[in-house]
Structures are given as structure tokens and as C-alpha cells.
Image (cartoon, rainbow, N blue to C red; front, side, top):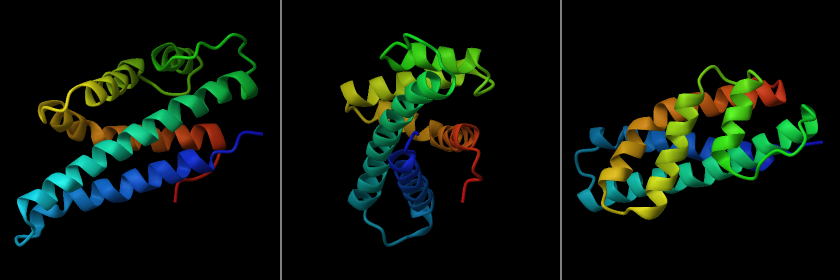
Length: 139
């Protein structure tokens, strides 16, 4: 039996912090340093959630779908997920994979901004995948 708790918790934390970040523009007295800290927090939570997600997806492919010899790397796992109809577009997931690589190797701010632009889509897709794998409705 697959334990989805860590994935669910990391996704919930990302969702809440992204909402907090998205509303930060409405807070006129929020210092720029705090806005930047919120953005950095969203990126870090994305990294954590992404890492949980692809590892859980690997377990799902192996244990629930019975696929032997699942690679231990996100991009091939996303391709297998797509081939097994777990999500409608592999390109989006490969984009998330690239965003994860970019945020871990480039701290210029430009890569973080690109990552932040993907967050709404990533969260929606991650919730959809969670629901597909667990059969649960996201709360």
C-alpha cells in the first residue's frame, strides 16, 4: 500500500504558500525583502513537492500498475505516466521537470520567476494526479 501523506502534505503546503505569495501584491506595506522571501518559499516548496510527486508516481507505476523496471529518473517516469493515461500531456510534466532542474542550478532570479509562472498549472496538474492515483477528491 502506497502512503501518499508526504506528497499530500507537500502539495497542500505549496498550494497555501503560492496563494499567500499571489496575494502579497495586495499588501502595500509588505517590504520587498518579504515579497522575495515569499517567492523563494514557493520555489522551495515546489522543489519539495515535485520530488515527492515523481517518487510516488514511480511507486504507483510499479506497485499499482505492475510496470517492471521503472527508471529512477523523473522524465522517463513522466513519459510512462503519460503512456498509462495518468495525465493528458507529457510536455507539461517535462516542463515542470526542467523548472526543477533550473531552480536547483541557477539562482539568478530569472529561473525562479519562470518557475513561479508555472505554479498555478503545476498545482492543478499535481492535484489531478493525486486524485487519479488515490481515487480521493482533493480538499
